[in-house]
Image (cartoon, rainbow, N blue to C red):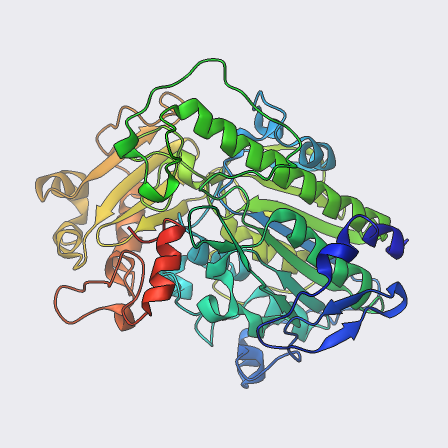
Length: 516
């Protein structure tokens, strides 16, 4: 069975892969495949909060056993929910994912906590909002005392592994490697025209299958997280993509509204950008389907919980900027897919808003573990329509948003919070005061205005106060952590990037569109 899975192109592709941190080679057991060893840490290294005596933050209901469920978390970079068939898209971009999750739970209003990768990823691995876990910038490592779901599962006896494909999730960039038994962050491929390091979906799936087939301990339950960078821009689907899309109706665009890193030479047709984006999704879908098929063939799906989501979405030709993300809290940027299957999950569609911070509590529930106290995230099974969902984007200034049902509030925050300080001084008249001190704020009824084209005045409500109170409680005004500030004006070296990074790293971030 395992050798049959590896026969699907893994052997040739894995030959010669060499980790930056471990140059040794190993034989892959009975498979007889020689592959390089990625960095594998002993469980609970000194960088883990559970290895430093801080176990009081963890409440265990039981230890894992052979019968404990397997857990699989698949996250996709830059995937809009409304470009998937299971969410009603007309193009066949995701047939494998649609088929695999059609008997699962489909969350129609799932939202990322932040419009860029590092804060969003740390949120779904911790159950915390960015202002709680503290990761707001690129190349800002997770604080050592922030507990992740991998820490908790490892402490309970799970074998944990991660396979990531975005340079901003490498060990050097974010420090998550110490939280997993196995952390594969081997990104060595570059896009045409740019020094953009990543790993394509086919090789990401290959790496995940090698771990599942030859390094996984069958006597222990396991947690595997796989993060694909496709379809992050610039949109360059590989030659072997499963389909070519051609939009019959050209859409002329203002190329100045397209970020420079995203522009294709000579392409001024917005429909062509959408075609390329959708082709990248279709390619990703094929490779995720290959992973899910192997997961079933190995017998892991029978006793498992599988979650599929994205770190954030992507603007197409909506609002201020096109074919990008990270700068705002619009629906196209923050609404993401969230699909769940396994462990008695009842099929159906869930209409009320949920947060990606709910992923970690849901995984812990499946493993039979209690939640650390005080988490913002909830078990998905316990969420409801009256809950307030929070998210953010950008820095200096920063946008913050909140959803309840189909209502949505937005407010822009400056570095000092002084406008909000004034607003907080008179909560009974909050809405009028926010307008008077010229804090930019917006309210939308998404039933009436799903494309967010007609902002309305804030209604007098407890929800408006909740959003302002949350922003005011943020220890990092405008999302800028204090260690990253510069003495004059709290100025970052570049948007969302702390000072002190070397020029080569900054250029790599520019190639990803994270630094403009």
